[in-house]
Length: 301
Ligand SMILES: [Zn+2]
Image 1 (cartoon, helix red, strand yellow):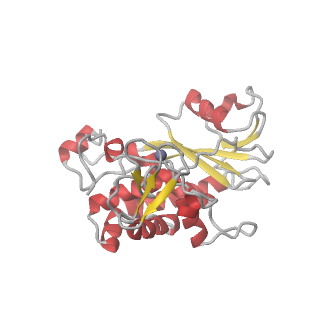
Image 2 (cartoon, helix red, strand yellow):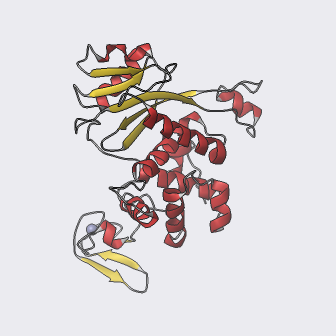
């Protein structure tokens, strides 16, 4: 982890950037030679692990599992595996998901290849939720299912999927996301949802797929993003069961991480590579329990 945070091996103070850093053997902490508060710091300061009393001996296996288990890891499984409480495991998993989120500013389709765009509805009935809480989240009494729309885009050349939970599937919402994510004048494949009609007017090359047609028009299809949806749905159904809409983006990001870093012929990544990638992304990202739950004044230990 030291090598990941400071690739040239020189440890820098996370507070002031100084290189005048000494290692305090007894305290197992670093010490910054510049005068400022909190001169002592650990490797975790400034990462998603800051302030966590959980050791790297537990964080690393958790990152390994979440980077590699095809269907995700539930907080119950992780709690048993690591010997921590379920609440702590849940918080750890969410911090790791934050690290997995791609921060790429590259536009999809920037290499000239097609981008598949599609929406799907995910969600279910939370079975084990208190009735009051269920009502407050809008699930109703009669076990009504709440479906949340998620938009997905696959850059076929780059083999990269991005997802986003969207408030509705109206024209303006869909178009805004495409304009934000996809290279202008690029090729976009969608189904015949009317929300995508303005694509041509926006100078995109737009081809549509008729789901009722049995034949495939060569390159024109959205099967890549549809495969991704079935992976996401399997994970949500099998492992996470009752995901609140508020957290759905994080679960989708986690699935994107595994999908975008899966082994292919030209890119033979293995479990260790995916783990290292997740570790490399943790520096500088930090979520608090309050940010995750909207509850202030609670800790995860
Ligand atoms: Zn310093």
